[in-house]
Length: 68
Image (cartoon, rainbow, N blue to C red):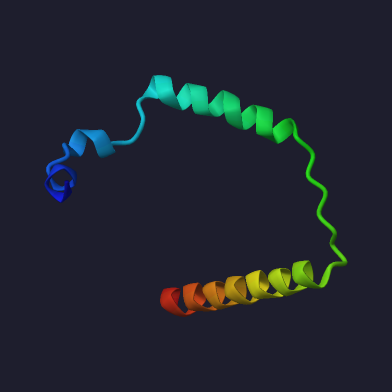
């Protein structure tokens, strides 16, 4: 069975064509209409926000250092 997996055509792994992207776009639009409620006072949310902010600050610092 492993032989079948190694002989798959590279064409099967390509990005979707324009007609398939249009279908995905309409699905995303339906998801945008859905309202998501996030508890901003939850400890898990606060930890996640701090982690994201820290990574962003490091990214900005590296970006600034690289351009100098």
